Length: 212
Picture 1: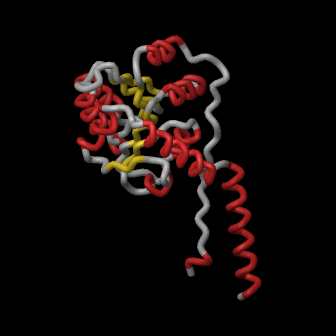
Picture 2 (picture 1 turned 120 degrees about the vertical axis):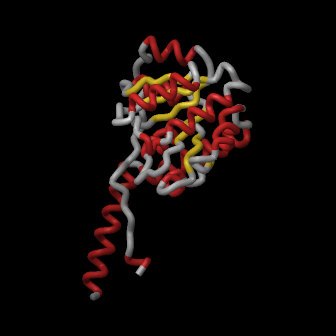
Picture 3 (picture 1 turned 30 degrees about the horizontal axis):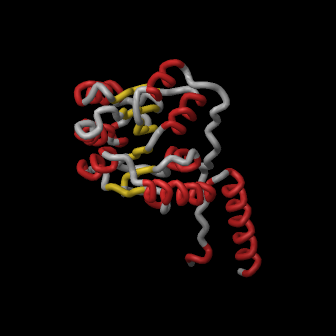
């Protein structure tokens, strides 16, 4: 039966353009120190609080580090923004940003952290891989499959694990391995690859119907 099953994603990753300079706010942020980026809507299951707590500890060893959170305003935004303000002044809550700012932040980030408790897919992980940024993701639900070999896997509730990945820059070998594996992994999810997978699935269905 497994030979008859094909899974085709409804999502495809496209390059994030950096065709124009970022806004002054983002440009200033990029100049202020290394960035860990979390692109996610402000909802509880995105697990911002765990990342905030880990980040607050990590800045004890790296006081110049910044955690930049971008994404649509979710139903838990007020609560999450309050937690950020309580835990560290170096957590930057930007909300939705324009495409050029997002591209500039991906280009500047030393790490994309994605500690979500559950995801049906995880498109920002692939966007980060396509932007050649190392990624650390939650070892939960769909994220390990989507991220492939191009990400560090950390239990979503493992505070120490998230502290460790932010408290020191990745060594050059690990960084190179994650970038290379990420580039290879995200190529499975381009619009061209998704279209071809859809065509292949229809062809398989036609052959199976003809043979039945």
